Image (tube, rainbow, N blue to C red):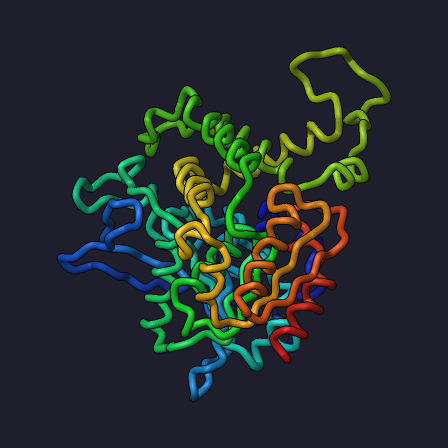
Length: 397
């Protein structure tokens, strides 16, 4: 969720035979006529731009499409090396591979010699799809907080509209981790005849009360930044301190006690002992979180963070069964692989098991794997070797 690029240096560059090479994002525009998109929360939006990338070739039967759903602050750049134009919040992608480049490409677990892979940026984001930073055609100014509330269901619907535009009737697989796992699950629930395989990583029917609490504090930090200005800060000083604090808090939830203890422990930062200061950085873990916050504000929009975390909060897959998860799971026709990680405390393993149990009780084919890991929620992006092996096996069977 926090790792928007590989957690280690890439094994190969864009010219390597296992890389999809240089890629340029594309856009599709929807609802650019008189009728806007009617959103689940009651608002409307139009026109709607969706930014997406594709890798590989669509087969003549159009039956080899794999849809990748990105996590909270991710984007459509899942693989390859970005060759498109930069921008205030996009230059961080320069000279970096896509956030799942280890997994997508020729001869990789999601093999682009076999599959046509699609990854689309969600509405409400700040990475190319319509969001709070976009210009409201009614005012000629950025939407800010006049942007309507969006949900995971809205994202899934737009994903399906993109597939329609690409001429794809059914997916070979929908795959996602964290909030991306919620999106993939929603696609399989809302359009069961269009998703043949489903892979959900580090996700479940809904986020926990603890997760809701963390998101609430993160939004509180942003909204109470002195520069927030009711969300109308474009063209002026943005709420960088509030957004940095939100990211620092969130990043703690992406890790685990074991991983933080192993990486930092209680070691002091560049010193042998304490300086007994209240305002300076004393410990290595403080320095690390400070860096995470400072680097994040250079590439993400505070308003988008409010909208994306709120969509995550609202999601509950059991809505499809009027509160009954088993009844909801009965809608799914896809074969499902659900993967949890032992130290994940944002989407703990019991949430994943709850989903798989509901699928089994509904008579739906499901495979569940809990991977022992010390990396917390980020393990779905860090435990590349194990995750790759599971995905390859599931897609090949």
